[in-house]
Length: 95
Image (cartoon, rainbow, N blue to C red; front, side, top):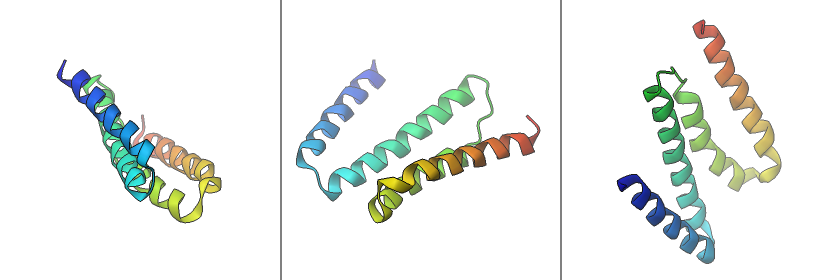
């Protein structure tokens, strides 16, 4: 129940930031994305999988500044680069 309440509260804050717009919203969305990726990686680990932790966390940290500085046109190639990097880490680990 605690996670549901936290999620609803966070959703309300993000909707309010969406209405306001601007750099504060972008920073908040970046922080939420970083936290969400951390939760997903943690859930995979609790499920018995061995996720590569640093690749998605790095992508979450890098994606918003790249989006702000370069624009949306570079996001798909950036995502594909990180997907290939994550897959390469899994293959090189021997799993």
